[in-house]
Length: 96
Image 1: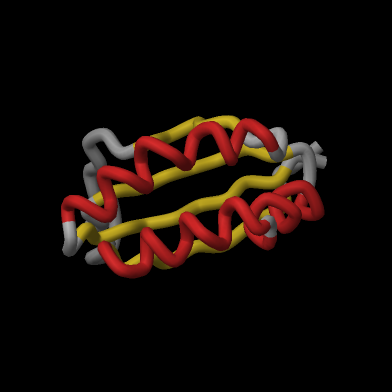
Image 2: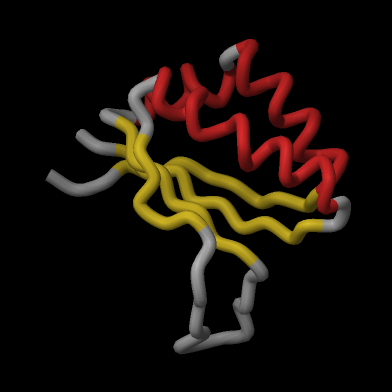
């Protein structure tokens, strides 16, 4: 069953985030992930959620998403991302 990683970010240090954005697509692809949403305009419909940037990734399943997230390659990029932004992220099962 497909799984989706959903993240919201707030950039604080542009240089670190620029390097992260440049390098992360290759690591996501290496672990079987694909972008469904990468930034773009978001329009709140209900509540007060108004993130600066939303990212949605698709993986074959939760285990594949965890392999990507826990990989040494992404760990290095997470450290870079965390120096330049505040991020909230989760993985959720899709539907059959």
